[in-house]
Length: 474
Ligand code: GLN
Image (cartoon, protein in one colour):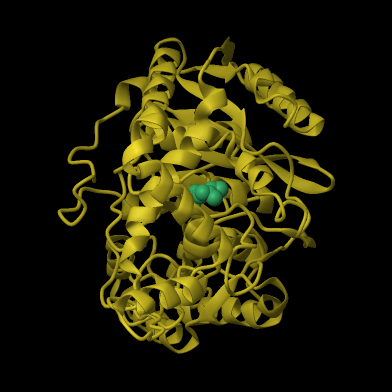
């Protein structure tokens, strides 16, 4: 029996290298777990049993030849808005229910090169709009720690799969917190890289100026391994970063200053257990030798409102392509206009429709300045706040979420309550900064997470401090 509970990428690699078990054994072990637990959790929308076993055999050959890399034979899950050639990519939507990807996303191509094993595609809120997977057209993903609670979202399927040992690592996407919030709810590690550090080519677009692909994993080292493998400039993504700045100098400083924003700003939205947990994290940082400093981010309170103007604007433009002609579902009408109405009316769920309405409204001629342009101006102010903060501190600490995973149905009737879930995570998307959620503490017998945000392209600092904080050895 392979101890999946305590497995990490490095441990699995070493065991396969030493011949303790094969990639096929490992893949088989995960497929067994999936068969047992997925019907209850609904983390996967589809399991690629046949192709995964084939890939595992190829990976075993690489071990025999001595050409295996760290990710060879590692069973991973992919959020169902990231394209894998020949597989369905539904984005959790009826409109793409039977859409088959015609090419690999760059991240998938990179992992295929390493001969990772693709176990299946995981559930998400429709088009990644949501914070609970309750907006998926294919059912909610339950939290493995308590199946009456949500797994978070939108990458809830990926986070639940990692937490329940239904894969060793997973990919998610993060536009306002969709990697970090479900990671926090499920007690795992989630990294949102610097905007542009990882190619978005082959990610079904939500908000193009905010979207990032990143890992959801068991520990910080695994996040680093996946991030190393998937990052890099890509000619197919014009926003991908050409150069990765070296942050060596900073890393060698032995102790860092961590800034903690004044979160009274959130006006009582935050649970007392979360605040207590943050205090404990601060004390722990101090005992490890870090300096902790209180910082002001005066425009933080506008981060959520600005996002819910910018995102719908970008999403409404990105979703215009689902018209019953080019992709996916087609509900034929008497004429072209009727085909559009029928297809989009039936194919999109309520949250997606709501955002298309808002997005179209804020972009319309008379309202552009009042809403969209104003929200972008606010975004610039938030960026400046962070730039200023990083003149004084090396890293920023916040809770990842206001509280632990909530009950299924608790927030689904009130979109604004759901939007407030993004309060701590969305600033890193507005600013393009890298941020990580690591498990720390508990409330209501559920995991809690804390978040570190670093300066631009400073992922290595996130890894270093997170490992130090968790006492994780390399
Ligand atoms: N809660 C955010 C939203 O609903 C999450 C988006 C994301 O990160 N994909 O838009």
